[in-house]
Amino acid sequence: MAGVNKQQVAATLLMFMVVATVVKVSEAVMEPGPQYKPCYEHCVEQCKGDGNGDTFCEMKCDSDCMAKDAATKLNITLNN
Image 1 (cartoon, rainbow, N blue to C red):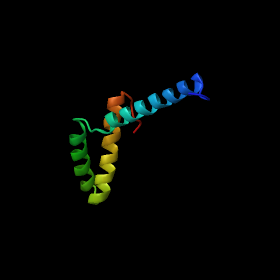
Image 2 (cartoon, rainbow, N blue to C red; image 1 turned 60 degrees about the vertical axis):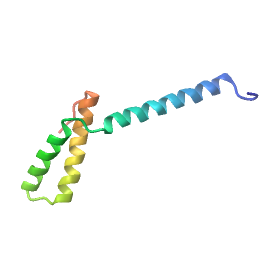
Image 3 (cartoon, helix red, strand yellow; image 1 turned 180 degrees about the vertical axis):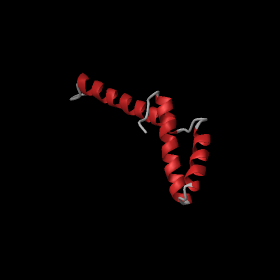
Image 4 (tube, rainbow, N blue to C red; image 1 turned 90 degrees about the horizontal axis):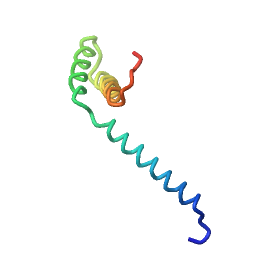
């Protein structure tokens, strides 16, 4: 390992660990929890009842319920 010092090796390993941690946390957050489906179904029903279209309601409710689910998993509070 001529030309590579210990600081470069340590920095490379640290970056790898950070990236691996971020990927793992992202995977855990993106997997819907048990509260997602009831949230989504209720939201779509209410949204369509307000006269909105299918695509709008599906996108809105998926986004809203995924955010609520992720907040629950990360133990944070969302501002509504």
